[in-house]
Image 1: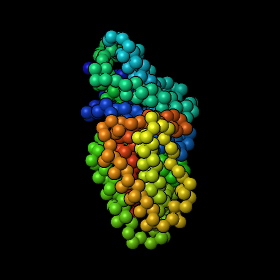
Image 2: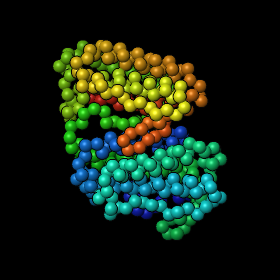
Image 3: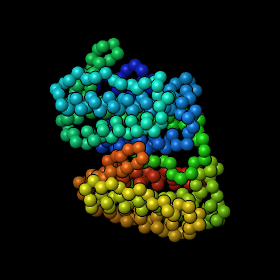
Length: 343
């Protein structure tokens, strides 16, 4: 792909210089970007979603409309490339900047989810030769350039990440509109974490967390965060329940073909501050050790066993490898949050 942009012109983010992104990382990002995006728009008012950026750039809604449209274009182009030899590809749909702010946020998120999932479901079926297939795309000056599947998807992922970073920047400037409670971190876009590193962290994190909290009094453990978010005890309770959920999902994927994965059991959430801290830490450590032992036993094929994670807006196909990475990064993020609360 000689043209480094997904489509030169209307996208304000410029050229996209991604690093060496593996096929598995591309597919994982396409499956999970939506959940991180949901976290960023959580609690924002309509005014915040539609306000222009301080530098006059696109609003949050306009950014989402744009990445949804570009993902749809890439899905259409890849489908055509796989069915024809060096086809002429349709022009990019960049979204409707003028209309985006009048659209419902759930509609925009749903469109983005559908297009990213459609593309991921195509890519997961490709062999190495198909990743190298090309079509001919046209620039705004009518010149043509090769659109190679592998190179193009690297640029698409970086395009997504750049716009998601812009949305995060706008969110930090405008919101949240209400105190954040609960986990709004979504699925986590960790880098390429080696299997050995995943297993090592599962065994070390609970001990690290216990040491951080040792000796704290009950008032400190149950005090809400300055932004109205969870207390230290509530974060530990959430980590414990998250660990159990990730383990349950992985066991299900290993024993059933493409199962629908269970959502986290939140029945105990209102009682986290009343629970015994030591007991919650022990249960977290037990789940993580069991998960580590399970992962140690897997064959390369088993790391790729899949399941379906459903949300109100969409569904995504994940594999065991994705789930293990998400679990580790989930613990990293919340333990970093605990560290910040402790000062």
